[in-house]
Image: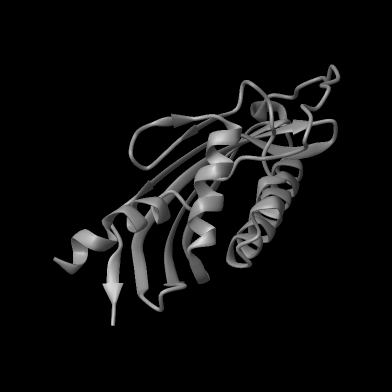
Length: 179
């Protein structure tokens, strides 16, 4: 019976890592010359992987601070942005922001425990980032929950010299109550 009373709250938390953001206005893209990964040097690929890894580390630090505005700056706010929520629904930038803001508002603390990340450089301006992690949250009610299995994918595009996620997908197993 206790699990049923927390189910709506837990469903919101399953979508916590769904962040999309960027600027308040869509970026104006400038034409760029794209280099295919097959013609890139190992050093160029490694430099991009290092950039993305650092960017994502910063992003998850903001997630732990429960700062929705800062979290949203890592994603591009355009009509083309798409997010796939853990429940299988599609969301745009504004819907995703609201979903996560609602979740954050119910939390006292959140910790992110990365397990694995895979960075696949597609071109010099397009990178696919995939991760697995665990999340631990303390709700404002004092209840503690754990998401043992969270996985996600972010598609990063280099826009005006900055990496922004233009697509986000997250999957998560149902959270478990922690005593």
